[in-house]
Amino acid sequence: MSNTTAWILLAIAGILEFIWATGLKYSEGFTKLWPSVFTLITMGISFYLLSLSMKVLPVGVSYTVWTGIGAVGAIIIGFVVFKEPLSLMKLVFLGMIVGGILGLKFIES
Image 1 (cartoon, rainbow, N blue to C red):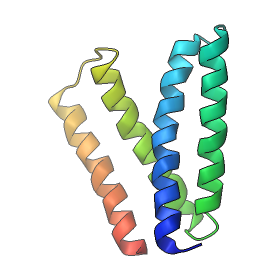
Image 2: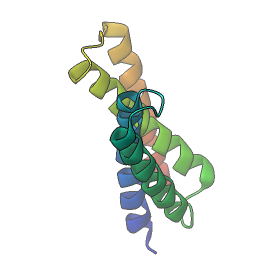
Image 3: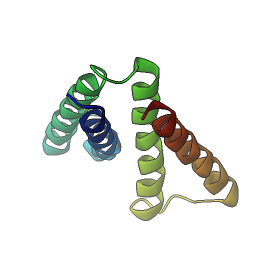
């Protein structure tokens, strides 16, 4: 697998991470069947893609980027879908996470 393919798989895995986190909210503690099934499926695919990316990329970079994408996505989904407050300080720290993800990408390319 090429380095580029590993990064693409890692990006998809990170996107699926905040998707399953959103599903987790809708599952209401795994008490709702279909949101729970959706969450478990997306969680499994996300972990699988993360594991594939780790065949090429360092574990620290892979895991950090995966959780970073998930964190950024979860904050955005929280703001857009769940109407959670988004302060200036949250935006500043969100920008720091994005900067860290991009920095790790560029030093590992």
